[in-house]
Length: 327
Length: 297
Image: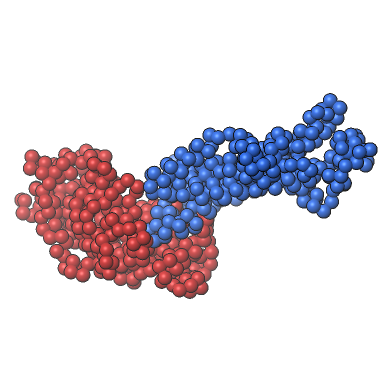
C-alpha cells in the first residue's frame, strides 16, 4: 500500500461499473492521500469518466456501480449511498469540474448566484451577504477579471476560460477534500489551458485538496500530477509516480501511449508511432487482459487476467512487462 | 483555409454567441407585432368596458330593436334592442376571463405534472403519468366540456374548468419534453455535482429554462380556449344569459341571419380576430424563444 494509504482521503476498492451484463469498468482500486495529485489517463472509452462519475454517484441512468468508495470523515460507503446522503458529500467534501465549460453553467442565472448557492447550500456561508463577499474573494483567487462586477454577469457574456474558472470557483467554494477534474482543459485553447492548469494547481494547494485529474493529455499529467493511474478497457493497467511511469513504463499499453506522443520518434515519413488496432466498443474488450488483441507481446497466457504486480501505489497488470526484469 | 475561416475558428465561441444574438433580438417579427396588436385590441376593449360602454349591454330597448348602423347605435342593436357594440365590449371580458382561467388551470397543473414526469427516476412513475396524460389527450375537449356542463350545470365556471382540464395534457407533454432536454444538460449534472437536491434543480434550473416555451404554449392554448368558449356558449353550455358572450351573440343571430346578417358578422369577426391574434402572438413568441436556438448559446 502507498505511504498515504493509512490516512487516505479517498479509498476506492474493487469498483466496477456496468449496464445489465456489460462491464464497463472492472475492479478498479486506488487511493488518494491528502493533497495528493493523481492523474487518471487512458484513451476515450477506457472508463476514466465513468470511474469519476461513479465516485460522485452521478452515473447516467441504467448504469450501476459495485465495490467500495470510502472517504475520510464520511461514515458511509459512497457506492449505493442514498441520493440524500450523496447531496451532502457532493460539492462539499468532493467536487468536480467538467470538460465542457460552455454548457456547465445555467444560462439563465447570474454566475455569482451560481457560486453563492453552493456555499449557502452546504452552510459554508451563513447568509446571502457573506456569500456574496465570499464569491468576490473566490473570483479574485481564480484571477477572474473585475471580481466586483463579474458575479453579475450571465454565462453567455463570458469566454470559455472565464467560465471554466467559475466552474473551478464553484468546485473550490467549500474547500473539498477531493477535487475531480474531468478533462477540464480539453475544450480550451492552448494558452488558456496553461493558465487554467496553474489555477487548478494553486487551488488544490491552497485548499489542501487531493486532486484526481482525468485527461488523455500526457504532458498535462507530467505538469500537474505526482502519481498517475493508467486505464485501458475499464481496468487499471498500471500506476506509479509520474516520473517513473513516464520514463520506464512496464505495461505495453503505457509504453505505446507514451511512444505515440513522442514527436522525435516519428518515422522517415514523419508519422508518429501508433498502437495498432483501435479501441473496441465499451464493454466489448477481450476477456483476460483487455489489451491483448492490440499488444505486440501478447501470448496465450494473456487470455487470463494477469493480476496486479507490485503495490497499490506503484504496479502494473501484465504477463509480459516491458523493460527491466524482462530483458 | 481562407482568412475569414481562420478568423472564425480563432474567435472564442462565447464571444461569437454574444455577437450573434443582439440582431436577432432587434428584428421586428411581423407575426409578433400583428398578434400583439390584435390581442391588445381585445384587451383594450375589455378594459374599456369596465369604465365605459355606449349603453348598458343588457338593457332591453324594444322600440330600437334591430336598428341598423347609425349614430345612436354604431353597430346597431339585436332583436331585443340591446346595443351590439356594448355587448361585444363586455363579451371580450368574458372571453378573456375564460381564457385566463382555463389556461391558468392548465399551466399550473400541467407544468408540475410534466416536470415530475420528466425528472422521475422511476420509469413506472414517468410512464404512468404520461399514459394517463395520453388518455386525457385522446378525449375531445368539447365533449368533456359538454359532459361537465351536463353534470355541474352550464355556466362560465364549468366552461373554464372544462377547457382548462382538457388543456392540461398539452402542457404536461411540453413541460416533460423540455424537462428531459434540460435534465440532460451539463449544468444540471454540474448542479448535482455541487450537491443540489432534485427539488432545487427543478425550481432553479428546470423551471426557468422551460418557461419561455410555456409562455408560447399559453398563447396558443389561449386561442383554442377562446374558440372553445365561443363554441360552448353557442351550444348553450357556456356563459348563461344575460351575461354577454360572443358565442351566444352568434347563436342568437343565427335565426336572423337573413334579416340582419351583421348580428352574426361582428361577434364572428371578434372571435376570428381574437383567435388569430393569440395564434400569431404564440408563433411570434416561438420564433423568438426557439429552443433550437437556445441550445446554440
